[in-house]
Image (cartoon, rainbow, N blue to C red; front, side, top):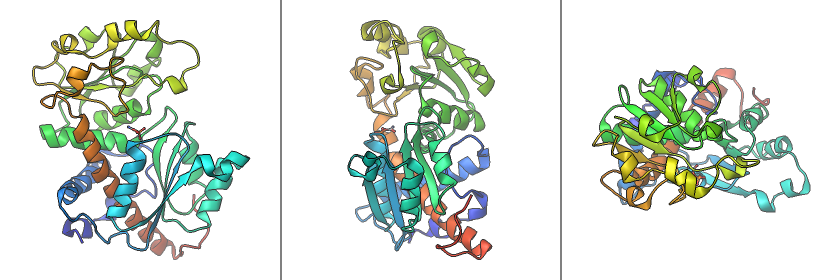
Length: 334
Ligand code: CP
């Protein structure tokens, strides 16, 4: 067992679930990042398996496609010794008309310890969390939040640059439909970074400055002097109608290439949550430049962050039940 993980003070994260970054304090976010950091080295060992979640059950319930999030949650749970079920929505009774809530209550009756849920509707994961008595982790809900993505982005930055506070981070592209952007805005501003958003007017949410960010519609203006550039995919699956004139035009004005990058800090780093559309929002030359691109590091940090979340929430769950005098078959929690 990992000595650091063994001594976790769960009172520093007084929540049953991880539904979003909004509402978490800087101290709670930093606590999650510190635990995640302790898992990075474990993941680099030959023997990665721990027994912290032995006897625990984690169910991945993904209503939208995923490569990174679903795989890394599965890997994280298995490395902690849990039993993992990946629910295939396409072959489940959801296809016969069963609702999200009925599906959740059905799974809840099988006594999982953690449900990891991705859903196309903003707020769906929070709603589901009110109907079950296990911990729920938001794997991305509509254009609302993707909290573990923001945590892994922050861990990547912190490990490379040693800090978050004081950095200037530009988040560029389809801000309007991006849950990654929202979670990152909450996290980065909470930890003291300056956040700039860069997007065409059609893809910039109204009154976004209320979240404590600066908004730009010109890449060369917005990228001046930034330390980190986070690129976002055009979320065409959430678009009804046309938001950009053409892919060629979009890349010309909002695609990241060396020329646009030249106005950033000379050491500025490039990030992308994936999946990446090369030649649409980012040029391959930059995406693959290991001296500037943190994209592979982000994927690696994803496993560590998800191990930390599973570890912490299963401990917190046990603590909550002990405090309430309930057992795993107790009343459905709020
Ligand atoms: N970044 C991210 O959420 O990727 P997936 O859709 O592949 O999980």
